Image (tube, rainbow over all chains, first blue to last red; front, side, top):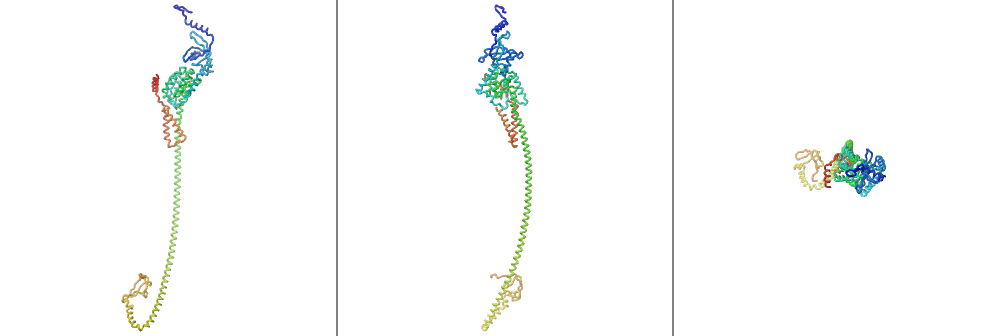
Amino acid sequence: MSEIINNKTVFSLIEVTTSIQKTIAARYTSTFWIKAEMIKLNLYTHSGHCYPELVEKRNGKVIAQLRSIIWKDDYNSINNNFLKILKEPLKDGIKILFCAKISFEPVHGLSLTIIDIDPAFTLGDLEKEKQETINRMKEEGIFNLNRSLQIPMLPQRIAIISVETSKGYADFLKVIEGNPWNYKFFHLLFPSILQGENAITSISRNLKRIKKVSSHFDVVAIIRGGGGDVGLSCYNNYELAKEIAKFPIPVITGIGHSTNETVVEMISFSNAITPTKIAEYLLQKFHNFSVPVQAARDKIIDKSRRLLSEEKTKFGSEIKLFRSATKNILIEHRNQVKSEAGSLMRQSLFRFKNENDLLQDLRKRIKGSVYLTCRSSRQEIKQLALNIRNIAVSLFRQIKLVLDQNTHQITRSAGVNLATKHTEIKNIETNINNLSPANVLKRGYSITLHNGKAIKSYREIKAGDVLNTVLFEGNIQSVTESSQKPKEQ
Amino acid sequence: MSDTTKYTEAFEELQVIVSEIEQGEISVDELSEKVNRAAQLIKICKSKLTKTEEDVNKILKELDSVTKEEE
């Protein structure tokens, strides 16, 4: 009921709103199928009712906006339908085709009461956007860029894109910082919005900042968690996915949801799914480094010990072998020397005996032959002496014969000449007188006798014979020293 | 990234020594030298696991200067 105040017809608010309510109810009697973007679902878990925020955008600008409501029962049936068909619940940031009644409540104002939502439309729309992003990235050849980077063996320095107060960030830090192996990480948080449309620009801005100092980091971790599985279509956004694909160092995602993999997760270096898994992934990298190092240490110690002990044993047995070998060689050589000495001794004894026998034999032979030679020589000498005597005797006989003949001749011729020669004889007698031995002796000559015979040749005398020399006055007895042939003969 | 190169190379060299020693390619003469080298390499690797020399203030300073340039 209106009233007049200061000449003005005035309605109370309830009158106006009730009027609007009536008008609208009269105008919009049936339900409509409407398409719009639901930026927020606004589910009140206590009551079970939802108050989705609906917009329509053109060229990125909101050109229409309306609140809406889904009653608990409708929400449950719609959500179940979504889960069945989209494999994800009804959530923020999706385009929906819904059946609604237009209603106006005096307290709540104009809103759409959503009775049903067609999941196929949303699915198609989301999938279309996602597929477009994928296709475009593949066409541009950047889809695998980040995945083909090399992650350092120890991804130790982590640039974290997350929300300081989020459960995911806390989970990540808990695992990384509290690791029982004392692995040390360096991490720096780059706070960012992680879901909804604003996440795209926020994450991109932080990526740009990290890029400026990327030399200080090994890896970027996008960590989200505890926010439910809503508002993740931003991760299918082309601009964001491109930024990550082209990022100079590996980007690891831990966005933490159970729906289909987003494009960002597909193209990131590694999708760990949850923040805890990122931490575990990094720790695993450290293990992959640490375990072989520890194993190397153990192996080297073990093998070195074994090698040394083997060498020691080998050396010991070599020494033993060497000792016994040298011993054997020494014994062998000693025996050889002994036997050589023995054989030398025997041989020299044999040789001595042989030589001695030979000498004895020679001595006998020399003695024998000397004796024989002497005997034959003596015989020869005797024979010679005999011959000489016989020759001398025959010579004497011849000479005596000649002398006798001469004497006879002389006697005969003497008778003839006796008369004529008487005087001569007388003269000769005188001469002969003069020539008598006495007279010869008187002149200094002497006669040498041996055994009463005058000696005329050296041959008649030998050394040691006693000679009697007759002088004019007296005799001399002497012993012959030697008798020699006259030199001129 | 010389730091990364250093421990990566140390790790690889260590693996080479291990495989050499496992395959009996190291003689007693070389053993001491190789073991010393391995000890050095293990030290480099282990210290890398438990130490980092990054300085937050330095990075923040760099970030600030870059941001200013951008503005």
